[in-house]
Image 1: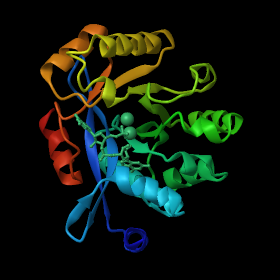
Image 2 (image 1 turned 45 degrees about the vertical axis):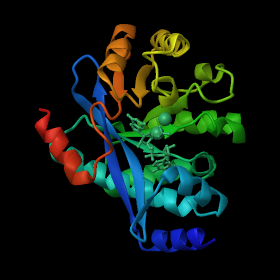
Image 3 (image 1 turned 90 degrees about the horizontal axis):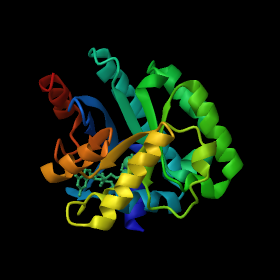
Image 4 (image 1 turned 135 degrees about the horizontal axis):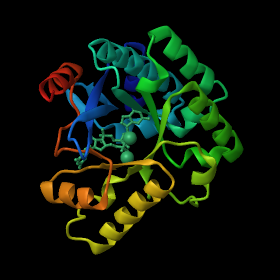
Length: 253
Ligand code: G
Ligand code: G
Ligand code: MN
Ligand code: NA
């Protein structure tokens, strides 16, 4: 209860921070973009978004928080692009509740207009959960977003319960292999099979595939041998504060 009240105040006062975790091309090891990850320090203690985002959803605070995240992420993305990194793609996590709102498309349109960010520099990460609310509406919203020119990624791919048939109907660009499949991939034959299959699926459907949670060189090598397109994980970088991220991009060129 106190946590919810503190979150309400933190939203009013914009006491959150956005971190950036680099996403790298596997073949060139160059940066392609970053995933935006929210951070909250409450009374000097970091609280994980895996704790407070679900709480915000239950407490009816996710719309306000989600609006702040999207707007601020686009502002910061515009700033990064303006530094000369014209092709950088900044990925923002969208809660299924946020995605399901009638005005979500118009919000994205307005945020792009207000911040001056080009649609091609924005990626939206949604989970298979967006289908649960209303499949036809989700398909329509994704199609409209695609028309706008934003990139669309399916987050935590492989962990949902939905059938794969939606991949035919959804106009998406990228599959993000959930980190649970990567974590111990060098020792788990089953994880290797699953990941190889997802990468092949991506290739056949002309979707980019990114592996999350890559921490070690053996994992990287395995993923390279399987033809994975992109990598995100501690191996290249932890999520970074904005200025550290800018330094990261500067120094890898
Ligand atoms: O950054 P970290 O690994 O602690 O994130 C934990 C969880 O919180 C992940 O599932 C991630 O997708 C989610 N998360 C992090 N930042 C955001 C955000 O800005 N919006 C939403 N909706 N979820 C986020
Ligand atoms: O659900 P989502 O994929 O958005 O969550 C991303 C989460 O994964 C973030 O909390 C981020 O901090 C975390 N993360 C990113 N890279 C790594 C990694 O290499 N190892 C582990 N264990 N977690 C990671
Ligand atoms: Mn994500
Ligand atoms: Na994920």
